[in-house]
Amino acid sequence: MTRTLITGGLVITASDELHADVLVEGGRVVALASHGSHDWQAGHVIDAAQKYVIPGGVDAHTHMEMPFGGTQASDTFETGTLAAAWGGTTTLVDFAIQPKGGSLQEGLDTWHAKADGVCAIDYAFHMIMSDVNASSLREMDRLVESGVSSFKLFTAYPGVFLSDDGQILRAMQRAADNGALVMTHAENGLAIDVLVEQALARGERDPRHHGEVRKALLEAEATHRVIRLAQVAGAPVYVVHVSAREAVAELMRARDEGLPVFGETCPQYLFLSTDNLAEPDFEGAKYVCSTPLRPAEHQETLWRALRTNDLQVVSTDHCPFCFKGQKELGRGDFSKIPNGMPGVENRMDLLHQAVVDGHIDRRRWIEIACTAPARMFGLHPKKGTIAPGSDADLVIYDPHAEQTLSARTHHMNVDYSPYEGRRVTGRVETVLSRGVPVIENRRHTGRAGHGDYVPRGLGHYAG
Image (cartoon, rainbow, N blue to C red; front, side, top):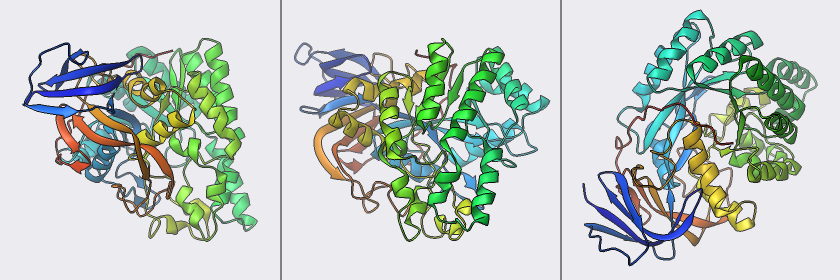
């Protein structure tokens, strides 16, 4: 493999910013040194002058090819991982799903079959437990040993994914023993189903009602409940896609008590709102996801929580459904709109825009998008940083380039962009995955199947 030298850039990690050259060999970072202080030779030299050199993004929450509501997410592992690469993400952690009545291993094997040999970037798996019983609890230990060290449980979606409090407690107790991290989708699904039924009976059928029935208080209640169950079990807990300030308050209270409680939010909650859900002519269906978009006043609470580390990670929950033929399944009944939005290609750019706008600084951008998810999910220091020995997952990022986000130019396999027409400053220029150029000067140079499956260790939780 060719030696690569990246020269003249500003290297940004979660802890440092330094003008340095980066030497890559054998798919790894082998050295960093100040510009001009070395005599390194390389067959491939990348000039990063006036650019940032950052770790490849780690998106710890995606759903490629996920079945939902009679259809499935429109991105395959091939299209979705390529779109991720275009957006500066070099590792993603997708969710394998245990089939009802089946084993965890059966679900994991199914997802391996979907991803094997087609991914543009490296990938790993979490496991959704949809049937918690004595057998699946025993299986958790085996999966942890084989590199699947996180398990997602739901307080939402009765009849599909919902686990009751006793099942969640048992899974958390098992995780306390084997070192796994339990992730939770925290909404009170049973109560939400009552509100859905009542809204439809009143003739409230438009997409905006999706947000109105999935109330912030029911997100907060479930967040409180899973935190206390984790406390009883003596286990850490990670709450996915936190959208509401009431739920943030529950996380902050628990963390102030010293509990190992963690949370992620997603770009859609930081940049979009119920105003989008209320767009006329069924356009609001494009923005239907769960947890739902909230009124814009929730955004400042989320930004503040990211600054104070009460939220540690920004993932995408990338689960795209085309507007035509998929979102349209819910015309006349918001409860039948497939829940999910695209975003895997936009996350790094939107968070850089947050740097430009003053919400976070550059190192925090790298922390929440690269380093913290790698640490949380047992991928660090192989992923998520730039240091000798780390994988050479590197992005040359132009902080001055301007672009307009649009479905016409994105690479996700979906017929709309939730950020259509949004101007952002900053753009990915070149992406290396384990030292191999996947995107080079805004041209795709990689191949399907380059991406490797990455078994994960146990998380080491940062703060």
